[in-house]
Image (cartoon, rainbow, N blue to C red; front, side, top):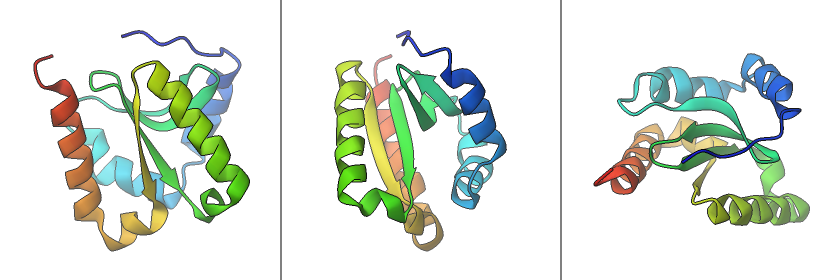
Length: 121
């Protein structure tokens, strides 16, 4: 499925790719870059930019630092997830600490979601 995007976000997405966090780099270089189903980094969708996106599975992965625990951030994240869901996109939120403390679990969770969402496609 094709999802529209705000063209103003393209430059921002490129800048975010160039300034990736160490957690984003680890997930990308140690797993998603060579995953058998294609993922994109810092993908513009609608008015948002998601950390990682798999179009075949319509799956967004968001890595969350400490700021996502704040009340306003939780509200904003919930609104974003709701709007993406309206487009058929499932969002998986992964705390940054899981990248370092449970990387195999993160990989398994992503793999399971991709397989479930691409079954029969």
